[in-house]
Image (cartoon, rainbow, N blue to C red; front, side):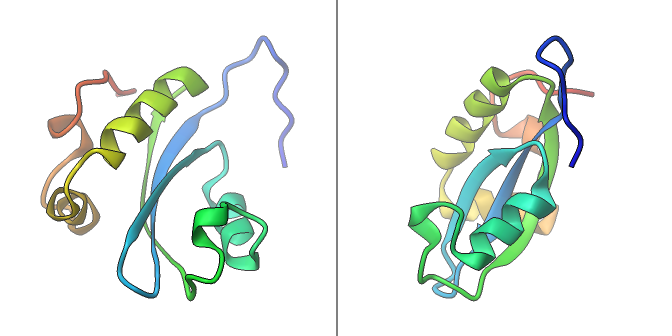
Length: 104
C-alpha cells in the first residue's frame, strides 16, 4: 500500500458493490481492490455485513481530494436504481448524471 504525504494528492475513486439482494452500495476510496476486500471480509461498511456474496460491479476515478469524491458519492447515492444500473452497464457516463466536475 502506497503512503501519500499530506501535501500530495491521492486519486479518489467511487465504486458500486452489488449485494446478494441486488442492492447497490456506493462508496469512495483511494484503493478500490483493498476496500472491496475489506467489505468481503466483513471489516468494511456495516451496511454490507451479512449481505454477501458481494460483487464489485463498477468504479471510476473521480478526484484528487476526498471532498470532491464525497460530493460525487452523495450524488450517486441520490440516483435512482435504474440510473445506477445505467452506470454499471456502461449505457451512461457518470459526468452525465451528476453536477460535480470530474477529473478528465
